[in-house]
Figure 1: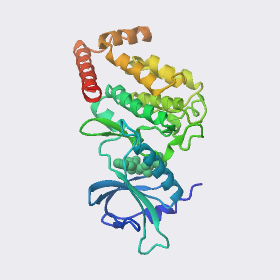
Figure 2: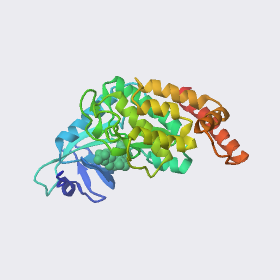
Figure 3: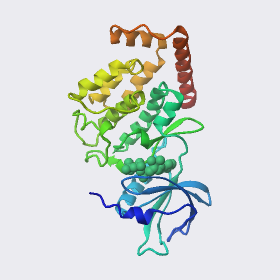
Figure 4: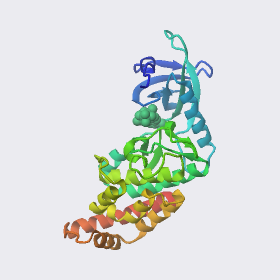
Length: 314
Ligand SMILES: Nc1ncnc2c1ncn2[C@@H]1O[C@H](COP(=O)(O)OP(=O)(O)OP(=O)(O)O)[C@@H](O)[C@H]1O
């Protein structure tokens, strides 16, 4: 069992001043943002404004995360993770030894599922397209994100960009995945190994999409692939992405860019033809939904795709 003694040392009340031993930067703790397997993250205020400060008594895990964030900061293109602002040790007055911490960009916004619950599941594909751009860059640099799950993805405002947080599970390609969450793990579904390779992240990406249409998730029940195919077929929102989802679940994509292009192909097809195709795949699709609803969704989807082109391609 994991030793959580660090919890006590890392448990600091709002208002606490954290001063770095080496760089002498000062951060005022505003509130606790959350804690994970490797430490506690606080919203903090320093001389340059708000930031997210992560502390842990496990200096190895702090250094590993710092190294990933440093590597990410060298990469051109979309931000692969929060930018790294400071790394230091905190000498708490009453503590026996200094506590390592790092400070990163504070990414403000709801986590993926909260955003989708609020705005509608049709946003899912647009955000997944953005995520695939990030993953493509990450994979080209030799990394695999590993623990992809909605809680590790924030939709930052006001430009509606998906951002990855928590690089604790980020693994060099070829090694074993360090951290995973069952629902998003292809090993759990019996659909592949836990070797860090791009197809591992692409499987999780397909599961993210499935999760956005099944927010309460579901557990494995027999043959993993058959069950996932069935769940996709049962949901008309997901059914339009069936081809892409099957390929990702079966590990048939060679790159995130390939998956992104397929998804964009579907998004750019007129909504009416997507719906017809999905219905014919569903076989005896029930006649449901009013003309007004269909027209509304058609309008929203066309608008979203236009927005996507405007925000990310122009
Ligand atoms: N850069 C950031 N900006 C905004 N919020 C953040 C940032 N980094 C972390 N958080 C918040 O802090 C919480 C804790 O983050 P952390 O990365 O330590 O662990 P976790 O994701 O909860 O757990 P685990 O590492 O076990 O998966 C996150 O759920 C998130 O809400």
